[in-house]
Amino acid sequence: MIEPFTIIQVSKEDLYPAFGRANSKERTIHVRIDLPLSVYNFVVEHEVYHLEDKAKFWLWREIKANLHGAYEHPIGFLRCVWLSLVPNRILFYIKRFKEGR
Image 1 (cartoon, rainbow, N blue to C red):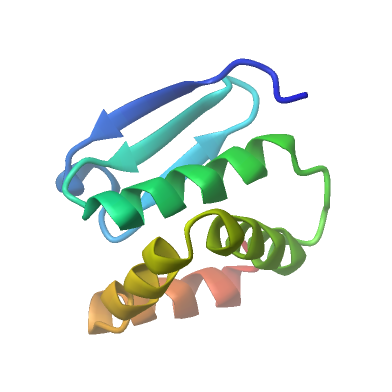
Image 2 (cartoon, rainbow, N blue to C red):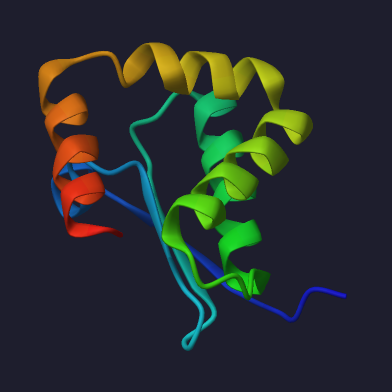
């Protein structure tokens, strides 16, 4: 069972270039309000998965959260991928990959 959590809708400027963020200790999820609804729903599912995931390896956590979100919201996942094919998002992923997070 998933413990209660809070979704906080934030502006693009608050999270850019990220689409969402989860804080397991505070049980909060921040999601950009400017996202298309299908992407927003995918991001929420992705971040909810992070709240409960106990895996240590960051890449494995991301793979599982993406699979979970894609299962629940496949159109949102595909649209999220499409929206991520821009230079700032690609650089964001490269930076996170190098940092190992």
